[in-house]
Each structure stands twice: as structure tokens, then as C-alpha cells.
Image (cartoon, rainbow, N blue to C red; front, side):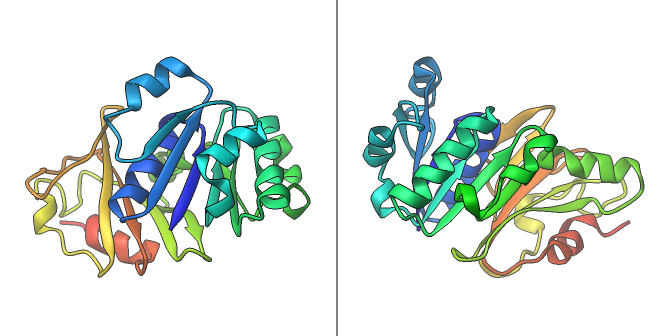
Length: 221
């Protein structure tokens, strides 16, 4: 699957890492040249400097051959422009856009080329739900056309996964742990990585549901 991600913030970087681990071809675009320089060599994705609202930049990033376009900048207007260009000018089959301000959510629809709208607060939902006693596992994004699902879960202190290594966690087929965020810092862990309470685990899967991940990581002691 070929994916172009516009916006190399935390969410854009997490998505790029997760998709690359899944064997996908990813290009990450950002207008911040210093950030682009820092990310080159640290990501498996191709990292390109440029304004993704410019059709020439999107074409250089591979929009003509992209299966998915993800607009995840911190500006709702930019994300809408990128989405519209992706759908109308480049005929990208699947367009995902980030909503930074909830009051703008009504704009993120097919008229602007958006197939899937994602709240900017999605990565914080697991913490809110844990605090209110509801589910600790959140289905962040489901790209149904591409068959890719991203799910985040935050480990409770009572979880049996705490203290275990990733190699000891039984995951559904076609599922990989893309990132573990600990203390606000993302890690791309291997099998020996030991999980701790409070870890935010981001998985990418072709088959798993949020209930599957809940079962794998959140069963109580």
C-alpha cells in the first residue's frame, strides 16, 4: 500500500512508523525544513520538505500513485485543502483527515474529499476513558479500503501485560506493535521490550479488533 502523509508531527510520525513496519510504502511531507532534516535517516519512510497544499509537492510525494492520503497537519484549513486536492486532482482512493478543532468537524466530509475524519484528541482518548472507568482500548483509525486498523491501548496497573516483554504477548495474526509511548516519548520496541503500567501501546493490524487488543493487553491480574 502506498501512503502519503502530510504533516510530520507526533501523529504523522507515529502513523509513518506503524505503516512502514507493516511493509507499506510511505512518504511523509512537512513544511518545516528543520524537522524534515531531523527525521531523515530516523524513519523508514521517505521524508519530503514542502507545502502539501501545493499540488506540485503532492505530485512529487507520489499522490498520483497513492492508495491513501493522510492530512494530519495542525491546521484544519490545510487539511481540507490537501484532502480536496488528493481526491479531486489526484483521485486518491482513500483520504483521511485530522480535525484539530471540533467546531470544524462538519466540514470534514465527502464534499471536501474526506473519507475518514480523525479527531486530534484521539490519542488522548484512552487516558480519558481510563479516568472515567470506561474502556482502555481505542480504535484510532480504520482504513477499510486498505484493510489497515490502528488501535491504541494504555496499560492499566492491574493488567497482566505489565512486566511482560512484547515477545510474551500473544497477538492476533497480522498484528504488530508499532510504537510504545512512555513518559511522552515514543519507542519502536523489539521483542525484549518490557511493558510498564501507563505505557501507551499503538498496534497496527489487518485482522484485530479493539476487543482483541483489549484481551491481549488489558486482562486483570
